[in-house]
Length: 234
Ligand SMILES: [Zn+2]
Image (cartoon, rainbow, N blue to C red; front, top):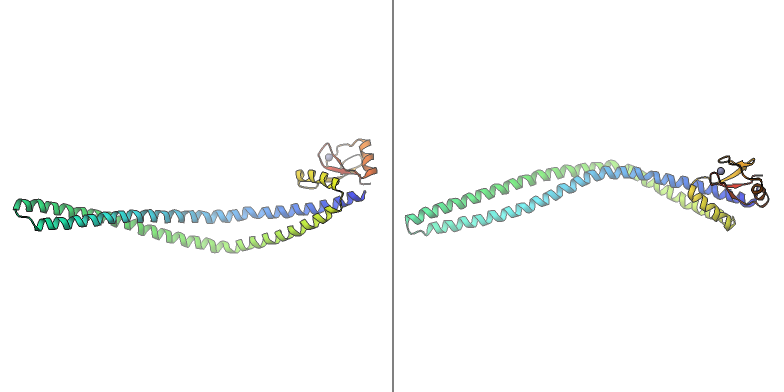
């Protein structure tokens, strides 16, 4: 085997290890996403609950303004009643006073209803806060585990890349770039030996002339059947 081919096969070993590490890293993603999904569901409900409280509180402030305005009307009607000068005026003033008192009652009832909704929503939000805390506590161990695993793989990848780069420096530039084009497409083993007169990956026969060039010069040829790079083993 040509020494360049031997060195290229060493690069390929490094690359396959890197693919494996990258796959392991990628496999953590769905596990993390599942945790996020579970937490996100409760968290979104909590956000909606808090928004509802804010909306009801704004409504409550408006209703309380109406209560205040109606109470002011009662006071004004009371003063008007106290300053009447005839029975006819007194009847009109009493009717006015009663009407404004009913308006106060109505708006106070509205305010109490809104306050009731706010109280219910606060209970609901407190429940959801408890659920979220429970989910987060339950997930904490798994998240730590995933993070530890990720850091370990990241470190392995850094080391594996450095090793790969060092191995690649030993192979002539032209061979490496040809190999890189093939491997990036395949993302797996991409250099194979001839087996007899054929490609050992797909059994496509390689013409005699190309085989003898490969054997004499150590050149790598792309298999027309499956696209891998072929070398003459012996
Ligand atoms: Zn082939």
